[in-house]
Length: 223
Image: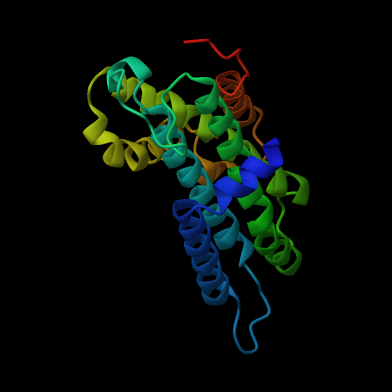
């Protein structure tokens, strides 16, 4: 199966489909609540919709990346255990293909939710350029997916997998605290939305490189 076909199959699985549906519903609600009513002249909907969208995409990428990264290796499962096709053991060629498919599926979620950003940007006409407004969610999604892979693997090695549901939102909250403490747009998708930041782009690019490295194809090893 091609990469796009694998990504489409991954996006159609129940977990990711429910996540995308929830994200679209939340964005519709946020857009409706932030859109000016009556005779209001000022439209600040973008300043709410764009950061909320960026945070949701980053959280989704971090969560799915951590889940894939926390997979056990074949040696941990035992010789007689047969893993399901949708959950290959960590490090195997099938796992690397799933990493690539999941990353592409997450990036397609960025494309699917993009109209919310474009619509609110056109209506609000903020000082932030449309180019950065469209680029930063792609950077956040790819970067946080790679960071999630590392987070999941670290917790697996440390035998702290039970903390994964807490570690994912805690890490995202920590990035916001770090940006506020340092006075920089370094890692938080919320603050990075409002102004182009080379530091943020560099950090997210490093995470994306990690994800691409994990997804690199390797040869099948004969048993």
